[in-house]
Amino acid sequence: LVARMRGFGETIFAEMTQLAIETEAVNLGQGFPDTDGPRSLLEGAARRIEQGVNQYPPGPGRPELRAAVAADRRSRHGLDYDPGAEVYITVGATAGIAASVLGVVEPGDEVVLFEPMYDSYAAVIALAGGVRRPVTLRPSGADGRFVFDPDELRAAIGPRTRAIIVNSPHNPTGTVFTAEELETIAAVCGEHDLIAITDEVYEHLTFDGAAHIPLASLPGMRERTLSVSSVGKTFSVTAWKTGWVTGPGPLVRAVRTVNQFLTFSANGALQLAIADALRDEMDWVRAQRDALQAKRDRLAEGLRTAGFGVLRPQGTYFVMADIRPLGFTDGVELARALPRTAGVVTVPAQVFYDNQEEGRHLVRFAFCKQDAVLDEAIARLIRHA
Ligand code: PMP
Ligand code: GLN
Image 1 (cartoon, rainbow, N blue to C red):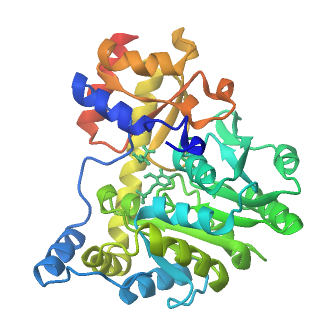
Image 2 (cartoon, rainbow, N blue to C red):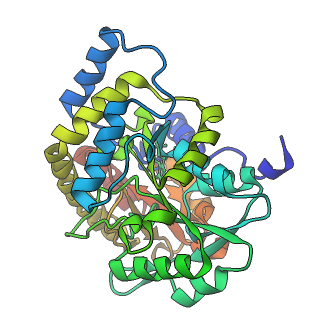
């Protein structure tokens, strides 16, 4: 293995899901729903496969999906992208993020990002030969909403800073950045001529009326932002691995140059079905969001009863829990033991931090599960406490 990838090992999601299988524990680790997406989406894909849409689509994606993505960005956020040159379809957000980072980060360039951070960011920055500069999000206020200190953000920027990765709604904390927080980030990008790469895979999954605001929609940001999203969370089809990058032509060309040689193209039949769903199934998405909000409340309440400190998320599939009230201090130890001692799988938050002390006492639970599954996990955790 090349030196720059040493230390990445197996992803925490693979490790914890394997542990869930071995122990038959309730898996609230890796974030994937246990119910299917909208019928029309599933049938639309099956129909296209039956109809013979089974050969390579164009590398940048099927025109139908690129048009649907552009129409969606325009109608919800007033953002105009040329489907031909400014929308690019990728194998999930994962490939979109990878191609974006590999397309704009030179060896030795620094990339600012917020920790806890989704695990693929560190790995692709390393692949690019870049250096990551984390800014820590910390709980604040009665709900424990994770926020950054603008001074720490400014202090993380140096002469070699090339890009910033912004994930909102944020995995694993559930923070949805406010207009004011995004304005701070946008100002820093403008002052230091940074490229922003946004990860918006949870864009539809926001609660209590919190609105997802794309960073690209702030003044001056469209021209310097690559926005990444995907179908997995929006339509509960995480295995479909179809995503998209939108941005100004020159930046999307950089993504395209790289992605040609990563995956060349993504799945064509799925792209056609997704194009229809982005137009026709948004009511389903809203209902799903409301259902998830109720699941968040259900699990948060259960975790509190079981003795955890609960840091209330405003979006995503996840809730962060503080293990110290239960008398534990090390989330990695607890997460490795819990499948056998309680029959529940969680993910230690520490793995999402460079400054590991910051996340030592936190674990992440997924609530994107059927109520009966959540209730079983809660009952087990209460017995364990
Ligand atoms: N970004 C974040 C924040 C995620 O949680 C995930 C995982 N679902 C991804 C990216 C990857 O998305 P995809 O499955 O579309 O590659
Ligand atoms: N995004 C999912 C999570 O955070 C997992 C995706 C993966 O397994 N890489 O749980």
